[in-house]
Length: 204
Image (cartoon, rainbow, N blue to C red; front, top):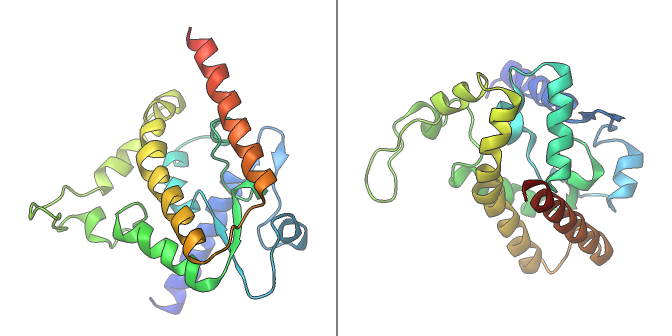
């Protein structure tokens, strides 16, 4: 990738993070700030990983106005999947572990750019069949209303983000480290369980 292409990619990433970091209550600080690093237990030499990778979630925000984007940020938070620079979305980890996690995401087609064969077509699946390109599906997302996007997101969270979370857990075991304290993990669990119960009550 050329220097200009890298700059453009980094600019797009920062813009994506800015959109995903603004909810109806305000804006989360950048992930590189000292205050944010202190909250997630960052130590020198580590890298900061967004559990909900900004580039993966970008298509779900494209085409939305500012109000709907902030509402979608709130929705992700309510479902237990904070996005952007929300400190609950950040993990401090060593570089090899960070790179391996992104390699996993790309290998299984969870994270892909416009030049990836999965996006533009030409990718052969394990069974030998040619897989359909993903780009048209991502392009179609931008034409959906906010409510329509919320309707399809649970499937992605279950199978796409679910696979990422499992891999993160596996890497934590291999590296004999946890990137979050037991209290934080327990709080996340309770948060998600409460949201699930509230949803069940609303649907009853």
